[in-house]
Amino acid sequence: MAEITQKDGTWTFDGEAVRIVPGRDKSVGPARVALGEVVVPLTALSGIAFEAGRKSGRLRLRLREGSDPLLQAVGGQLPDAADPYQLSVEADRSGVAEYFVDEVRNALLLEQVPSTPCYRYLLPGPAVPLSASAGDATASFDGETIRLEWNWKTEESKKSAGTQVFSVADVDAVEWLWPGGLENGYLRFVIAKAPTKAPPKYDPRAVEIYGFKKDPLMALVAAAVTARMPHPAAPPVTAPAAPPAPSVAAAPGSAALPGPAAPAATAGGSGSDHDALLRRLRELGELHRDGILTDEEFTVAKQALLRHF
Image (tube, rainbow, N blue to C red):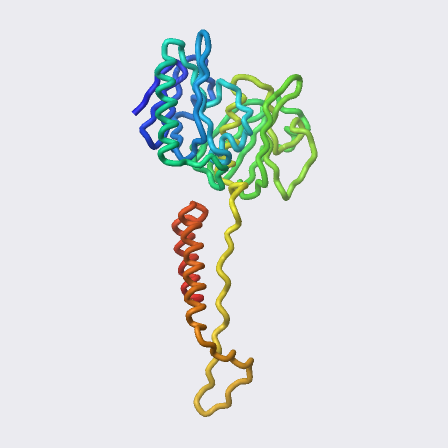
């Protein structure tokens, strides 16, 4: 067990996961507080580092690409105060931070956790229902429906479109851009049925953000929606081929219906079918073990395969 407590929060490692609890210091941003406790499984980590400084240092977790819907949604653009995967460390606690790093690294090595990208999310994302008021809107998400309500900062033509309500099933992509320089940022939901090239300021499916303290709250909405969309790296799951239609036996005393001649039996034919069945079962087992198929999907696919053979 390794633990370090600072003003930013507390990190605890039990050998299987890093538990991150935000602190109550004013330097901790509202998005980090709203996100709350985050549990990062060891399998989601690609590394950890401690960056020592003269007055203070910084602990940083590196997650595997595609493991976390929050990082997937924002593309590494979170400001420091909203980033749950870094911890400011006082100079006199650097020894504890280095011990924490050694414990996590040893566990990664012992468990042989790969640093390769993930094809499914290993973290659940922010809890729902969720609502955030920032930028030019209030965005709400209940796990199925997204709702955008405008405020006094919204451009008039965009506001005239009224409150926007649409399903996560209709969202093709979630786009996030943090403000930079003189350019505002945005959170945009791309809807295939209503494509638009309008700037976020005028797009009724986008929230314009300006870089204020509460604007990273919109990143939580982006992450919650992203977590409930198909993973971009997930391979397609194909259903087993449908079995051929059974032949119809002729009734007693009646003429047999004409049909294609049955193929001649070949020696070892049943063995070939058996080998094919075992091969398909092994493939399904590997997909299930790797997390591509859920328990339910694995059971359904296996039953369909057995019926086919």
